[in-house]
Image 1 (cartoon, helix red, strand yellow):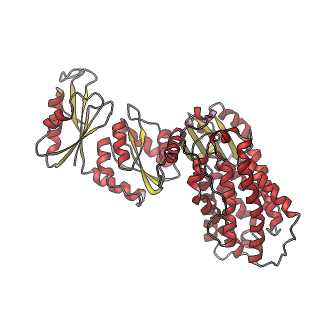
Image 2: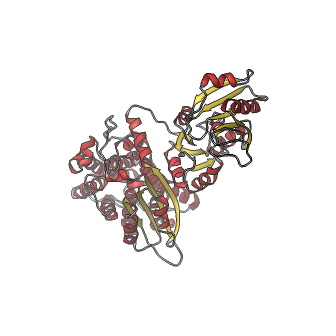
Image 3: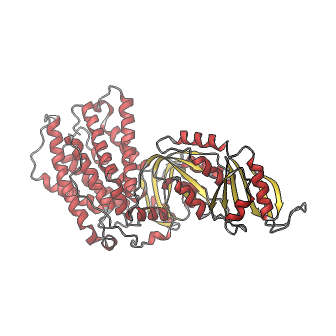
Length: 555
């Protein structure tokens, strides 16, 4: 914005960023559902929102800390450098990283012309530099994507400048806003046409019957800037709706599971100048590789099955931070459900439960939790948990580890995640189910974790399993039933008697007993019901868990 008027210009810059963010939020789900390139992962809108939100958050912090200082006193270079760095560190996925480079390119142009009025001419130059920077960041640029859209928008405003009269330095704030908004209208019109033309340039889009999600997101962003400059509500931009179909074009990246993003800050004794070296190493682990930034800080994006190997490449180069790992197979499944008509709402807080057994998973889903398959041993890696956290449609997350062996990995994932994440003290799947009823989507993760932990204190758990080997003390043989209350072995022998003993141990002072049958349980529901104490209300479920014949919980 114009550098005269000082503080009002800074506040106007904030308003424009906020307008862009509001617009992206408004069309966020629509942008997500359009995504099919380079992989139909369904989070382009999320990634662009996170990038812009990071910029706005840092700018608001600067404004708050600046006190009465004007834009002149702070300095344009400090402001644009802060926003460019915030975009880099907040970027996620291909779309977020490329958007960060658009912002960085524009920032470079603004900084290179200190004291020059931010008028239509400088806006046009900044857009051109943004397009060039974004193209340079991608090793194999694809036409028909957000790169093309930005280049077409920049070309349109440059042509428009030939017809415009120069803006007077003493123009009023209203006049300045309108002149800039009018120029951006030209950019948006060109962007919409470029978006519509995208499927002719990129076969993957045409095959799927969609436009490019990132390109559409860029147009939406600029439309939000216009609305902010004019103080208007809503966007004068056509909607693009993805077809309701579950079959999407297959791309090479679908062979890799995790969309992995992280920042690297150079060690004090070295600089991160050789990005091509790291790109070559990352391409041995996956594809869709981006390494962008400056010699002090880079942002890394890669699709891979080995997130830990990707971060390990930078162990000697600097400090890895802002790690974000998304399970793309889960994103594709979520996208298909949305396009099939399921409504997705974004809560303040969601829950991730680590489970095994499809029946158990369905029980958790019925209570609103996102589930992560922990495998037969219920022991997922830190990176799998981090990807699970990313998949929860909420700003904050509570993780239910449901195994003592998972606590440390869950805590490590919570510390790595940039979301607010709390790990509850659930050490058994049946206990987590009983306590999950205390979670509320409108509460914070801290509040929900506290309530879940409180309810867990009132849940007693037991289980019956098939002995894998003979007991060293001669109490039971391999194949016998063994029964536990908590971690204490209390009964063994024949399945019915062992189950009855565990139920009786849990029954004291209890009104409700829940029994979840596992795969291959040797007694059916009627037989289980006959073994239960008559004073108890029995709740029975088929869980399908492979390692325990029955899981029991008493409340």
